[in-house]
Every structure is written in structure tokens, then in C-alpha cells.
Amino acid sequence: MENGTALIRLEGVKKVFFTEEMETHALADIHLEILDGEFAEVMGPSGCGKSTLLSLVGLLDTPTEGDYWLDGEPVANLTASERARVRNRHIGFIFQAFNLIGDLHVPRHGRRRAQGTGAPGTRARRHEPPHGSLPLAALGRSAAEGRGGARRGG
Image (tube, rainbow, N blue to C red; front, side, top):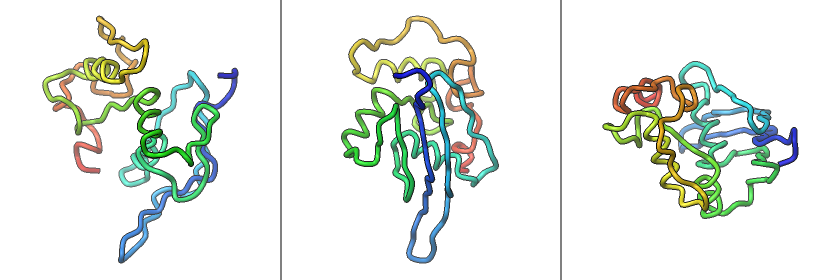
């Protein structure tokens, strides 16, 4: 990747959820750029669109409007299998409570993800990653003890 190129770039991203009775505007006109090697936090009150934004950036969902580039490549025309392949090889998720194995501590979930990618050259490290290297505040806790909105249902 070229130095200074955005790893994640969103321009004018909107997400609207439609039901028969209403439409819910979860994200409106989001502009975001995260460079390779940068750390970013997504913070805000319950219901403000944090999980929706992460679902879009993680290729689990698509925006209603706007453009998204991952590592300089537009993702709008990726098929479901291409999105899954990119997600599997380049994007990692550690959920707050759901989808975790209750007996494992948070750092072990990071290793399990590395083991499960199947990407060439990937293998789990034999040591625990340093505290702070995973995007969770619950390091050292088991997954079942983790805190957060997903566990509370919000």
C-alpha cells in the first residue's frame, strides 16, 4: 500500500433500515478516513449507529448510499463470496459477548481467529498478545464476563 493511502475510506455513507411501517436512518452522510497503521475508536451513546458503522466497514452489510473503499479498492460491486473472502483474510472481529466461546479468555479468541482464516502464511502465535492489542476493554476476562452493548442487547 502506498504511504498515506487510506486503508478505510467512506464518503457520504448512509444506512437506512426499512420496514413496512417505518424507515430508520441509522447513519447519515458519514465521511471517514483511516490510514494504514492508525488506531480508531467508535464511541457514542446506545442507538447512535456504532454497530451499524462497524457492520458496514466489516463488510457484513452494505450502505444504502455512499461509497466505501478498502485499501484503495471500491467494495460496492463485490459479490457475497468475495466479501466473505476479504472479511476472512483482512478483517478481524472480536465480539463483545455473542459468537464467543465462553471458556476462552479474550486473547485466545484473537488466536482462534488467526487459526481459522486459512490464509496463506497465517498461524496462531504461541504467546498471548500484549494487553491493549485487542479492541476490547475486557482483557483477562472470559468472554462470558465481557461488558458492552451487544451483551446488553443495545
